[in-house]
Image (cartoon, rainbow, N blue to C red; front, side, top):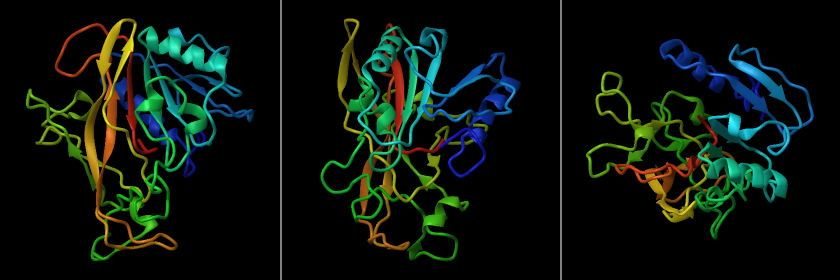
Length: 273
């Protein structure tokens, strides 16, 4: 994973901020950090710094940033003590955090021991190869390609048939703001379409945390579905039908209520944006 244009590159993702810069009054400034020592660059004009050998405790002052976005692919036990303390202090001071991983343990070296984050997403299998790549219980959301209703292949994640997710509607009759969109763009007002993928991760059931004297409930805001019963690509076994927790958030206060934000962070079950 890097900030280039390859299969695991994030350069296309960064262009989202160029569009936001063009259509809003915000002045976006992006600092890119990677844990590896290899020098890197990105031509996006909104990138103001690139930092190899990134260390959360010493490379920057985290409180100078509105948001920290984590894209991890390496497996491991998490951040070292000094970096973990810096990230936790940032979160407790109101900093925004977005954390992702991929199937199995991918991303665990970066995210799996961060307070609250570690309790909201599965960073490893938890009994039946749920977040693995091959077994029947895996979270395979690929959809059949046009004209072939019986087979799902790895490359089907690259076609124009995405997955539909089930968006949670709250007592106000609205989805969570993270999954809402102007009705002029989508009449339902819901972001209920996501890229499909042959081995998603999975979020954990809802819980609550107490930070700075404030108890905050997390929220599952969407689920996704494995079609199951299909013939799958290469070594993968036929997947079982299942529904799994797809998108999870903690905004510092439950949606629909007002109150002080002790922290806000979001987790997705997948590694795509």
